[in-house]
Length: 152
Image (tube, rainbow, N blue to C red; front, side, top):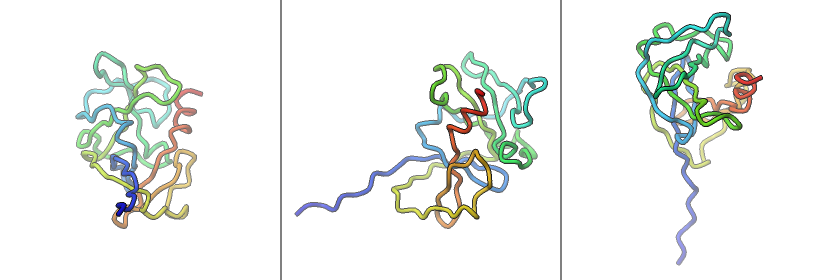
């Protein structure tokens, strides 16, 4: 007798924001680090919070909340910086970081989670969609839209 075919599980990371959570594939995360001194970039966009030194690289750090039209975290030193691998088409050293309110948490999905309704998601070109995990709406970022913002 054949076993029923199980759905493949995706390993994800929940990144907590002010009033929302992002859900990204674990494979896109290079490292989660404690906040450190950021160098400000004059005349930069409000969502670009600065640049940190990480593994001999200069890594830009963004606030996804500001990118979505909201306010930056009140106390970023209480959270973490999630360093993500470079977006498609970028050089292998072009990492970027996201500010988060708390330590990111592992999640998993197998495709059986309900899809979030558009009315439950921020109206933003940087949101690809969302799913519901344990009754909470998780935002799936549009990485291609981020690519266009970072590298016009």
